[in-house]
Image 1 (spheres, rainbow, N blue to C red):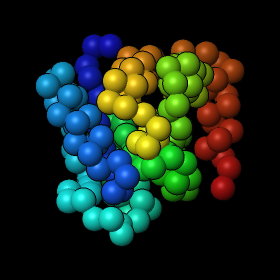
Image 2: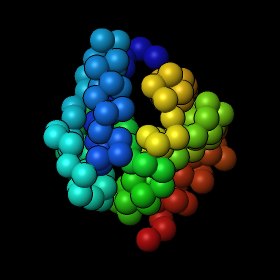
Image 3: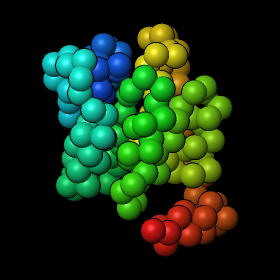
Image 4: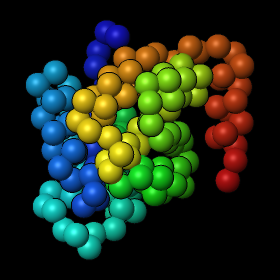
Length: 152
């Protein structure tokens, strides 16, 4: 990977602490990271707001390679919210293989992590795999992404 992607990261109250650790880790690793919230831990916040903020930031960034990382308790809610937006291919990263195949085969651009189910090391392992796996760019994968873009 020649240039590291810009990362937009967001989390609700369940992912707040892990988000802070991942943000610090990524910045120390040379990534440009923008924290899209929540910036304070609020036990009654709602995940769709932070998914929307990350997706909006990605959509308005003129850079070629931008990615999003979203965290909530199960990762499912963030994934559902992110996938409401055209051009977003959000995936639930629950292990390294799911992260690898989502990038290699599907060119995923948002990684959703289940903060209640992962410790820091597990999250790092999945995130690294996802960040470092390139899209295979095979004709069949490109065709499927084009079909996804035609939905909804």
